[in-house]
Length: 167
Image (cartoon, rainbow, N blue to C red; front, side, top):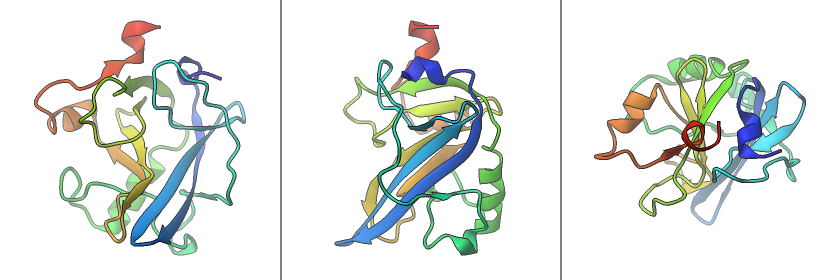
């Protein structure tokens, strides 16, 4: 499966693992699609992405108290200043959403995420951060309410849309 093959699929589940080590939070996010395949959030416009998690993963849709530590990082100081229960409700908005487009930052060395952004049918953008300083809450699933919210953080459009190149 390639990055462009994601377009049109619904997200059945978002899975992840998390650990703290040497002052760092580490996490990885996986998407279970409506076709049963488990994939990572891609980095590039053209990329093979189908994988199987190598570590034990848990769904981010489980009640928060059942997760050992937050799997969903977010930039609370930048784009989200909401209490944790509202963040949990927001995460539920990702389930069964169709993947509409992919935003790649492969040519932008100043971009802060390792992966690109998936644009969902409800307008949300999701990505992941695999490593962050311990306790910051940024390792794991990261999201923005819309392209506009994301673009307001940047002076210029730092990405390429898959739909502009391949669809």
